[in-house]
Length: 302
Image 1: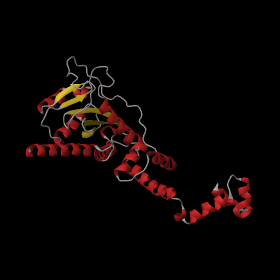
Image 2: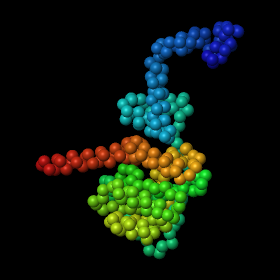
Image 3: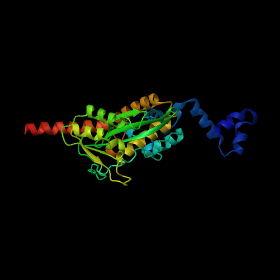
Image 4: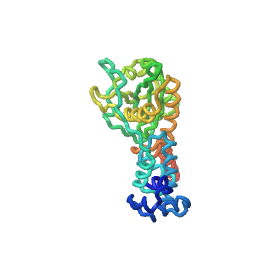
């Protein structure tokens, strides 16, 4: 409305225009004064201007996938005291919104195996410490050069992605290479369960033998149970929502591999996860080890 008055004030004058429009001349002049001298704006307007910059920054630096809750929690982590409703209002004004998940497609093919490992998890995706329960799954990405497949291994305790691999072939060493990365990067000194669905990649002889070689107990979800590997599917759902559907179209394997590398690092070190108290997986593990070291020290001193 102010812009309309600016466009026609020289032709008709401010007062005649305001007599027709639902705005008082004093309101128009007050707005123009604050526009010329921003320091005269209200404290709320000045704070909103600063918060808009911070909200935009948080949204931009987190793959543009955060909605109101995660932007609000990230601002609190950085020391900004702001109400969630204010974040909601300003994000709406800026036209910012979080990523919305779509349907997760099933990728693994059920293996025709009469004897397979039992379900040691029974849909209880919880762990009291790192490296006690891993879950694995894989997904596909359509590219200009055909399908590319991505496999993940996730530590249930912190939701940290501890292994991943990208391949052009679903039946290659895709799942096994992701497992090898997890084995190399993680310390395992207690009982560790590896859980997956009944896909042929996870019930293959080479895969099960590798688990046995390093002393990891295999666990396979129940047949016909849509929640048999829910946590891994949830992480893959985030990957598809936050990377694949937002950054495509994809040219080929190299593009997907680079994007996956960047996302996994961000996911582990920066992404706020509601299930672990709106902190990143790495920070959650560090807090655990810090508490464990303090308890060990206290026990040694007593």
